[in-house]
Length: 132
Picture 1 (tube, rainbow, N blue to C red):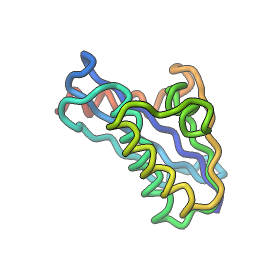
Picture 2 (cartoon, rainbow, N blue to C red):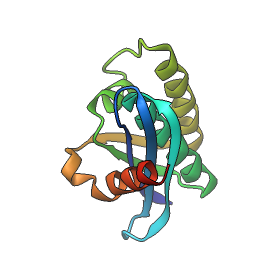
Picture 3 (cartoon, rainbow, N blue to C red):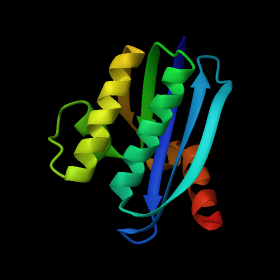
Picture 4 (tube, one colour):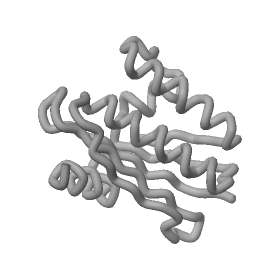
Protein backbone atom coordinates (compact mmCIF):
# COMPACT_ATOMS: atom_id res chain seq x y z
CA UNK A 1 0.00 0.00 0.00
CA UNK A 2 1.14 3.53 -0.78
CA UNK A 3 0.37 6.42 1.57
CA UNK A 4 1.25 9.97 2.54
CA UNK A 5 2.15 10.94 6.09
CA UNK A 6 1.68 14.59 7.06
CA UNK A 7 3.49 15.44 10.30
CA UNK A 8 3.77 18.50 12.50
CA UNK A 9 5.02 19.37 15.95
CA UNK A 10 5.14 22.54 17.95
CA UNK A 11 6.00 24.06 21.29
CA UNK A 12 4.68 27.25 22.85
CA UNK A 13 8.01 28.61 23.97
CA UNK A 14 11.09 26.67 22.97
CA UNK A 15 11.15 24.57 25.06
CA UNK A 16 7.61 24.84 26.34
CA UNK A 17 4.31 22.97 26.33
CA UNK A 18 4.58 20.81 23.22
CA UNK A 19 2.41 18.60 21.02
CA UNK A 20 2.63 16.64 17.82
CA UNK A 21 0.21 15.43 15.19
CA UNK A 22 0.13 13.30 12.10
CA UNK A 23 -2.35 12.50 9.36
CA UNK A 24 -1.89 9.33 7.33
CA UNK A 25 -3.66 9.31 3.96
CA UNK A 26 -4.18 6.56 1.42
CA UNK A 27 -3.21 7.19 -2.19
CA UNK A 28 -6.75 8.35 -3.00
CA UNK A 29 -6.69 10.93 -0.17
CA UNK A 30 -8.78 8.89 2.26
CA UNK A 31 -7.67 9.45 5.86
CA UNK A 32 -6.32 6.19 7.30
CA UNK A 33 -5.42 7.72 10.66
CA UNK A 34 -5.10 11.11 12.35
CA UNK A 35 -3.70 11.75 15.80
CA UNK A 36 -2.69 14.74 17.91
CA UNK A 37 -1.06 14.49 21.32
CA UNK A 38 0.39 16.80 23.97
CA UNK A 39 3.82 15.59 25.12
CA UNK A 40 4.62 17.91 28.03
CA UNK A 41 7.55 20.31 27.88
CA UNK A 42 9.77 19.83 24.84
CA UNK A 43 11.38 21.75 21.98
CA UNK A 44 9.79 22.30 18.58
CA UNK A 45 12.25 19.85 17.04
CA UNK A 46 11.53 17.09 19.57
CA UNK A 47 7.82 17.59 18.85
CA UNK A 48 8.45 17.37 15.07
CA UNK A 49 10.40 14.13 15.46
CA UNK A 50 7.80 12.71 17.86
CA UNK A 51 5.18 13.23 15.15
CA UNK A 52 7.39 11.46 12.63
CA UNK A 53 8.03 8.46 14.88
CA UNK A 54 4.35 8.08 15.84
CA UNK A 55 3.23 8.42 12.22
CA UNK A 56 5.81 5.92 10.98
CA UNK A 57 4.70 3.45 13.66
CA UNK A 58 1.09 3.79 12.48
CA UNK A 59 2.08 3.41 8.82
CA UNK A 60 4.07 0.27 9.65
CA UNK A 61 1.17 -1.15 11.66
CA UNK A 62 -1.17 -0.55 8.70
CA UNK A 63 1.30 -2.35 6.41
CA UNK A 64 2.17 0.68 4.29
CA UNK A 65 5.10 -0.24 2.03
CA UNK A 66 5.63 3.02 0.16
CA UNK A 67 5.38 6.29 2.06
CA UNK A 68 5.90 9.97 1.40
CA UNK A 69 6.45 11.96 4.59
CA UNK A 70 5.47 15.62 4.30
CA UNK A 71 6.57 18.04 7.01
CA UNK A 72 7.08 21.76 7.45
CA UNK A 73 10.25 21.01 9.45
CA UNK A 74 13.02 21.55 6.92
CA UNK A 75 15.59 20.58 9.57
CA UNK A 76 13.96 17.20 10.21
CA UNK A 77 13.49 16.48 6.49
CA UNK A 78 17.14 17.29 5.71
CA UNK A 79 18.36 15.24 8.67
CA UNK A 80 16.24 12.24 7.69
CA UNK A 81 17.51 12.51 4.10
CA UNK A 82 21.07 12.50 5.45
CA UNK A 83 21.79 16.04 4.22
CA UNK A 84 22.37 17.38 7.76
CA UNK A 85 23.96 15.62 10.72
CA UNK A 86 21.85 15.12 13.84
CA UNK A 87 23.93 16.70 16.60
CA UNK A 88 21.33 17.03 19.38
CA UNK A 89 21.23 13.87 21.55
CA UNK A 90 17.43 13.84 22.02
CA UNK A 91 16.92 14.27 18.28
CA UNK A 92 19.55 11.63 17.48
CA UNK A 93 17.62 8.98 19.44
CA UNK A 94 14.36 9.93 17.72
CA UNK A 95 16.00 10.00 14.28
CA UNK A 96 17.52 6.55 14.84
CA UNK A 97 14.08 5.21 15.80
CA UNK A 98 12.52 6.88 12.74
CA UNK A 99 15.20 5.34 10.53
CA UNK A 100 14.49 1.88 11.94
CA UNK A 101 10.76 2.30 11.28
CA UNK A 102 11.40 3.59 7.75
CA UNK A 103 13.46 0.48 6.98
CA UNK A 104 10.60 -1.71 8.28
CA UNK A 105 8.17 0.10 5.95
CA UNK A 106 10.41 -0.20 2.91
CA UNK A 107 10.33 2.92 0.76
CA UNK A 108 10.10 6.29 2.54
CA UNK A 109 10.62 9.72 0.93
CA UNK A 110 10.78 13.01 2.84
CA UNK A 111 9.38 16.27 1.49
CA UNK A 112 9.52 19.70 3.13
CA UNK A 113 6.60 22.08 2.60
CA UNK A 114 5.69 25.50 3.92
CA UNK A 115 3.50 25.58 7.02
CA UNK A 116 0.42 26.75 5.11
CA UNK A 117 0.58 23.53 3.07
CA UNK A 118 0.36 21.41 6.23
CA UNK A 119 -2.91 22.74 7.62
CA UNK A 120 -4.58 19.66 9.09
CA UNK A 121 -1.55 18.41 11.03
CA UNK A 122 -0.88 21.98 12.22
CA UNK A 123 -4.47 22.32 13.43
CA UNK A 124 -4.27 19.01 15.32
CA UNK A 125 -1.08 20.20 17.08
CA UNK A 126 -2.79 23.40 18.20
CA UNK A 127 -5.88 21.52 19.36
CA UNK A 128 -3.68 19.17 21.42
CA UNK A 129 -1.83 22.15 22.93
CA UNK A 130 -5.10 23.92 23.75
CA UNK A 131 -6.48 20.77 25.40
CA UNK A 132 -3.21 19.92 27.18
